[in-house]
Length: 141
Figure 1 (spheres, rainbow, N blue to C red):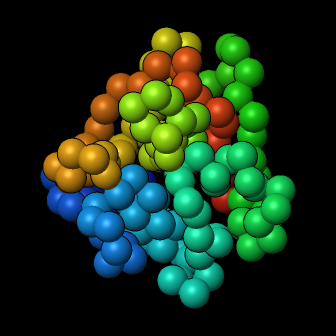
Figure 2: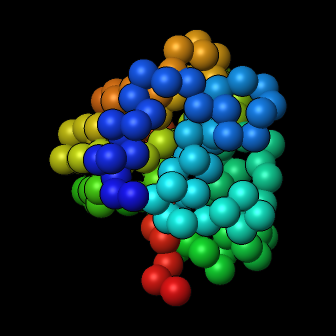
């Protein structure tokens, strides 16, 4: 499945990949890992306490390290379409956030994501770079 087909299939729907805690941002990304990256449930990166763990704990996660390259964001960099963007926690969200890059320019990232607090389903939103930690890219196997 390609990225645009994935967006078309899940836009407006609540994705609860693991059946726990409702439709979280990580659930949508795990569904993306399965449908687009081709990773079955038993091949997924290790579990997380919060979305930002995908970035900040990358080096201590052997399955994730084998499957993904982790890119540290530096000002001026633009994440590629299809990358999994990881955002740092902030005062209102101690878990951070994660989503799939649909498009990006020097000002904003168009992110396919879902909000675990709002539980309102997958959607495309615009994110600024101020909380972006980095992104994951699938390694070519």
